[in-house]
Image 1 (spheres, rainbow, N blue to C red):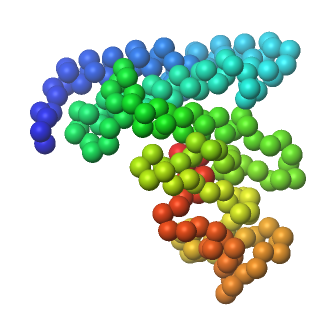
Image 2 (cartoon, rainbow, N blue to C red; image 1 turned 60 degrees about the horizontal axis):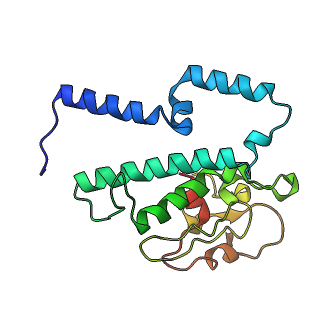
Length: 200
């Protein structure tokens, strides 16, 4: 490649710097630091209500947005170093595409907090659809599944490609040769489902 492979000492220093950056962010520190996770759980157990974990709580959305900005800033840093043919700006200054992608990462990170609590709707995080879920390259919006994701199945031994999925909800969708035609016809070439984003 165009860049020399770093030495072991250089890699250790780089990884140390990355860990120190990530330890300043709630989302990444929660994943890495068992003591931090324990203290947060103790804090939440002492709260009289669940307001802290409600999707419209400014503290929660700020935490998720801070991590989204950091994640995309890191992508921007590595893409520049690798001469990758997509430009999100720089680590310290995301451009408009980078900011749009950060919004997608944020909204994807919030999906579990914004689920409809009505269990009769059988909603999972994969059924969430956000306006930000639009390609930063083609401006093509994603589309929601026409039926809850939990009811989509492929026959045993068959790959779970989109064209092999069947609606198993028993809600009366038209099937053609065992396939759900409403599913196949709901997506045009180039479109992706919201769950392709939320499932990251």
